Picture 1: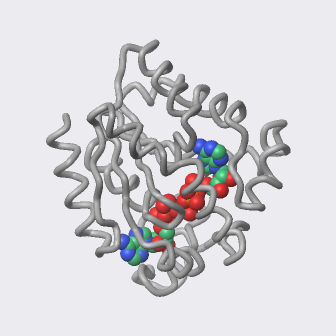
Picture 2: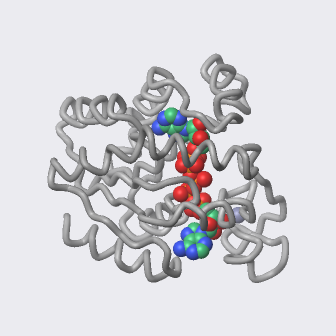
Length: 217
Ligand code: AP5
Ligand code: ZN
């Protein structure tokens, strides 16, 4: 299976992708994570992306498509991917269709996580992740069992993202509505779209997503 997760910042794309990854043996592929790795490594693409990401705007299609294509070419992706944060523009969606066709694959389902904008600022501003394994936590909604210790890997170093301040989050929401929301209609036209109410508890959303994926495959 190959899944696309759509949804504004804070909708829970990363949180849910991790859960589906374990259940279905798929690879989570987050262009946000790939870009942050490029920024940290100081690559050419990373240098160009840094300021754009800090402003909450979208990195250019050329850069993102190249990064995604390279990662998809690695052998582990052959078992199927969960695309978290890609595509984000029509140009990216068309590039993905071409890539899928060229490799004899297709998009099994595109899941739109539907939320209310005003709740997203709260969700994002309390968020942090384990530096070692990337597991996500939240000051109010999802704390580790032992304070400061990752439930998943036992790591003790937690990090917060540079673009998770209120001003940048507002810009990221704007970019989502202007450039990414049109992809809901794009995938609806291809008959692979599933809309899910993502204002509920994390586990209830996971349950519904699992049944969507099971029915689609
Ligand atoms: P990216 O890293 O993709 O960030 P984003 O889309 O803004 O999404 P987030 O990671 O903020 O949110 P999420 O939906 O994954 O939510 P999460 O599960 O963490 O992109 C960052 C930047 O990179 C972009 O702004 C852009 O510049 C660039 N970029 C990336 N891809 C690009 C592309 N394709 N093209 C161009 N530029 C690109 O959940 C959030 C928090 O809420 C967590 O703490 C979680 O525990 C909690 N939570 C989750 N679900 C629930 C729930 N149901 N109830 C309560 N709390 C919840
Ligand atoms: Zn961890």
